Length: 117
Image (cartoon, rainbow, N blue to C red):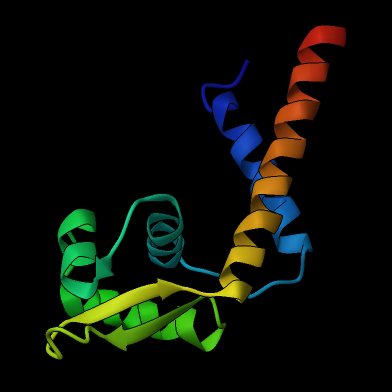
């Protein structure tokens, strides 16, 4: 058994995701997207920077790419216009749902393989 065999399920999910013919996302973009969709908000550039321990300009660049794809949107906080809120979108939610479906299917296949293997 390979010392990296635990990475095979991750590879399978990534290959399946590539086959969906969606935009390629960097690891930073994935981390941001999953953080916005899976953790309670409100999300701000500053908070995301602190949580991921990544400089704010790097967060802003990654958010630029995610917003071009329609996966997130940014808006000014109505109470403090200096604060930029990072918000979910319908397109982003559909992408996350699709990705979750890929992961769930791979987990199901893995469970069946362990059962019947």
